[in-house]
Length: 160
Image (cartoon, rainbow, N blue to C red):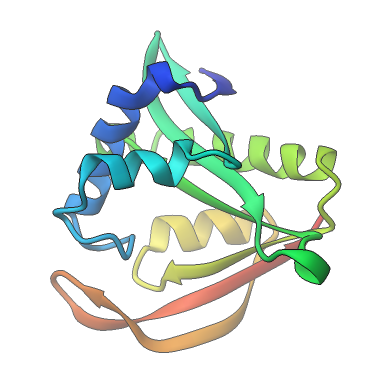
């Protein structure tokens, strides 16, 4: 597996992953009918730094790294990750998470915060805990899960 900077040439692969992930209605707030351009802009818009994870020449994951806030809060990073559902559970998320933490350190961020981790997304919650994140807040019933109804979302944080 290799991680490299995302380019406009990755648009089809990014859209495939984005579309497949949001179709589940169980991890992201994007509705299943999110338009392609909106999905691509989430990762490829100007001012956003993104990477893709390739395995045997096929893009299987993507993440972006941005400041969580502007100005006096810009020293805290934020990131978003998507893994092709066909390969989940095989280390792609961990590889991107570790890479992202290193990129955030190199960029001078002092901490990283995830603002909205769906509580029932146990794979993500467990991975972020293994990578040193703590749940610092719970947003009661903040996510409308496609199968479970209203569930909590977590704010997760770690210093770098």
